[in-house]
Each structure stands twice: as C-alpha cells, then as structure tokens.
Image (cartoon, rainbow, N blue to C red):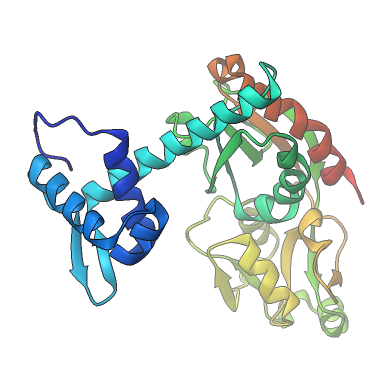
Length: 296
C-alpha cells in the first residue's frame, strides 16, 4: 500500500497512473494523455520519488502496476465516473440517476435472467454504473460489499428487505438420446451435478434423498457449467426451468422435482433504499425480472 508521506496526490497524478495501468507502456500512456513519452517517464519517476514507493515494475510485458498503483488506478476510475456523471447531470438536469450500484447474484441467474434485463434497462441511465459479482451466498450483501442481491431462496435473511418476483421449478433435463435410457432406469445414464463448493444446493439435497446411492459422473462448481455439459450431451442434470429455456436440443425428462420449487427474490438492506440509484434499479428490475422468471 501507499507509504506514509506528506505528498498530496493530485487528480493529475491519478490520471497519470491510470493511463499507464491501462496502457502498460509509456507510448500508449502518452497517447492517452496527449503528451510525449519522456513527459510520462519523468512524471512517473517524480511521483514515485515523492511517494517513496515503486508504482510500476518494468518487464517484458511492459509496465506492470504494483498493488499501490492498482489502488490509485481504482480511485482514478471512480473519479472519472464521478466526472462523467456530473457532465450528464448538467446536460439532463436534476432528475438524472447517477452513481455506482453493486449487485450480486449467482452465475445462473446472471446469465439467464439478469443480463437480458440490464441490457434493456441500462441505456436509459447513462450516469448509472454497475459492479457485478457472482456468488452462491448472501455474504456479500450482509457484509455491505453489495447493495442489491438477486437470489433463489425460500428463506431469505430476515435482516434484508425485498420483493418476491416469482418461483422456478426444477426438472431433470437431458438431450433426446438420453430419454429412453432415463425412463427405463434414471441411474443408468451419466449424471452431472454441483461439486462440493455447493453442498447446500437444493438439487444436491433432492438427489441424496431420492437417489442416495447415485454418484454423479461429472461435477461442476457452477450451475451454468452443469447446464453447458447437459447441452453438450455429457449426461442429465437437475436444472431450474428458466435455465433450460436457452439450451438447444435439451428437453425435460421428468416431472417437476418434489420440494424443489424455489422463489426468486430481489433483496437489499433497508438503508440502501434511501439511495435513489438503488431504489431506481430496484423498481425498474422488478417488472422485467417477474416477466422473465414467470414466462413458460
């Protein structure tokens, strides 16, 4: 991290570091800053001397940023976003929604439900930025590392507030060539399942109860990977119906799995709803996600 120093980092310093982090070379950084290469070289050396730390390491791959340079670059990007938001606010008036909203969900929900909604929604809010993180737990939201969570759950944490958007059912899905063998003996075909990184996934509990002796042939650390293997014809798997809609040449091989229906929730902390950016995204996503999760 940055050493203790009396030197006051300026906006010019942040722009300099960000340009070299992005460009990885003096020439590309100089082009971004519209100065000559020697100016960039001298400025970086002067900044490092003033701070008393190294910001970049020269290698065959170019100028590689140290942890301190990465920290400065992150702040520079935030300043850049803030300036852009201010510019848009001046153009469009006080009603513009700006800021950064941190959103967390699972990879399956992101790919199949959230991304289509965001692609439709975000062009309407040019001053609004997103930070997306995929995780299978509520930890990020609870630790205040995220503002909104989109989660499949029948028991969302009580300290969060939100909206129930609909529910999804789970079925066994596979390619048509697996149908006959599966109907004759479900355990005679290769199964694909979540690995030990998702021990509490609802399909794991169902399989252990209904087919306790079944050992999956293939295991994956995400439901998106499970679905991809199913589409490739490598076996069958229990998947939520909203995921299977986008899989080519894959069909339902079973009725809805008992006790596997799960609600989709849009969640946040009570204090976050006071933020216009969070409230706006909450209100805009609600009808779009309800339409997607409930379409059949």
